[in-house]
Image (cartoon, rainbow, N blue to C red; front, top):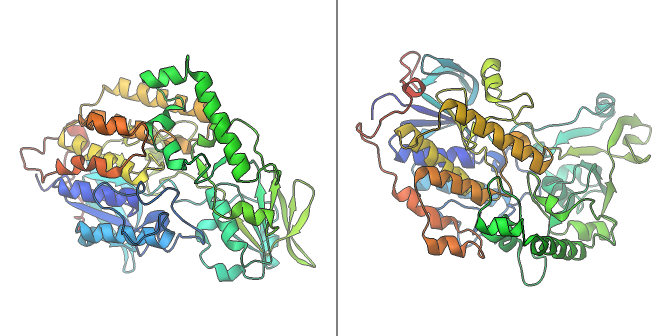
Length: 514
């Protein structure tokens, strides 16, 4: 290992920490930058909204080599998840590599590396690295719609903010609250708010199918979503033998299973009684991000503590004599002291130059990343966590091993033309399969297992047959993948063979990362 190959990681969330742990164990000098004062990314105390919990259980939403504490509930909350990640940092000795409260405001390609402009409490500084890992998160740039009349609404005393910027439940006690959106975060926030607010309304432009944690028939959703059999019910880019059967001669069996699940979810969540049955097929639950039903949400709707305006949008925000209000497309005007936007995120990397950003994406803003990691046209750069799924910790961990192997010369890439064609083909497939709802190519739901398999194939790592067979009926166990970490050893100079020299020649100018 030479003094080159210094790696800067932008982001100390799940993906950034997994990258730091794997790459440092492979012998690479690393430094992790994050603008927040703590680790966690979406789980940071600066981002957590009331009601935030993991979607799946502590048995599946974890790293391969660190289980969650025994005293955690089956579904950890946001604070517990952040504490788990703090424990990960200490367990693997990453604390000295963290630069928290430090924002990367610019990253420019220089020679064969990157020149970074960073800002902390002491001012703006420069640093350099040979390889840059972008782990800023696909949920890092909150999107708030440009509502007509928003300025007047706020001047009149109304509050408008994204859910990721809403942290204090007491701030809405006794007030009228309107939540825009119907995804997981919208329902989480609405359920939490409904216990203290004077009124809680949800404006849903489009109803989505949601999966109860326990839909019935002695099943839980992890057995239906996080198994190879469950994943096979959705059409992947390349079909295996069993999948060809389910999407061919056995299609009626597949369709019947979806019909049963739809009926179980409809009954369990009281959707007919509440007039909240979504349009469309139940398999559309997996367009970009399968949504799990928030515990207690539909009960609060039934009891009148939450009112859902279905197939509705915000038309106008205004200030009235009665106070801040909102006009809806269903013709109603409702009082709303606080409007919380659960309206998603924009996938951007603002610290990269416009020239680099244009080379990263296609004309629709989709990230052109091979294996959701490697840019087709930008050298000395990789992404981490841009394969978001129900198995994000495990997916990020396997992705970190893929990146480490690439930097060591352990992965042979296709020729540039084939690489570009493969990326374009995958984006086209994602577009057609999700009607464009794939978060600009950064989400792999419902194909988390397939995504991990693709990376493992490149790494020439194969799970034991018994484990793979078990995954057809039982949820994936992250601990089954510990063997990847066992292969990680500090690299020697002889091992540090760098593929594609133009990608990884050490950057000699600029200040060190220290």
